[in-house]
Image (cartoon, rainbow, N blue to C red; front, side, top):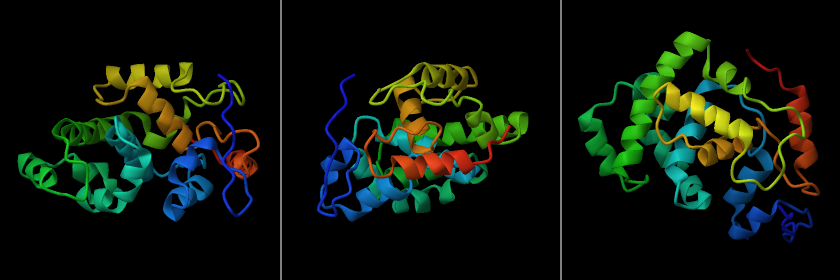
Length: 205
């Protein structure tokens, strides 16, 4: 794919083109600068990212990011052990929560996936150890893709395990967000920072 022009905000630091969609939004830029593409090993944070990427489907990430604190409160800090115990009463509570995305299918999928996550952790040791096994060789995945061979493999395996809302496009977004790949555009001011973080990161598995 043809590389998109970088976004140049007033601070003079070029950023990935997608940041232009939230020009002037400090929260959005901070997410790009400090979080997106940085490696994550905490299982609760990874489960959060996985769930929120599912909720984002069909919506803008800006919408999800602005609702993230409400999502955290509604879903017990994305402690999958707690979420796996949610029942119909919790589904109705969440459907009535204006702070989150009130989509029954996505809510029920998040609860269902929490149960699958408990199973996966029991089998694989941790969600982090499992996900990092899908890390592709460095620079083997082109920039600016909607999905990739590694995300297709991850999606296929999770679906075999019974997970929902884990299609290859959603899983590619997860891989970008959790630093499984460094998908900051070449020339982005934060590409090198993300790369150094990945180099210093201790892989699990």
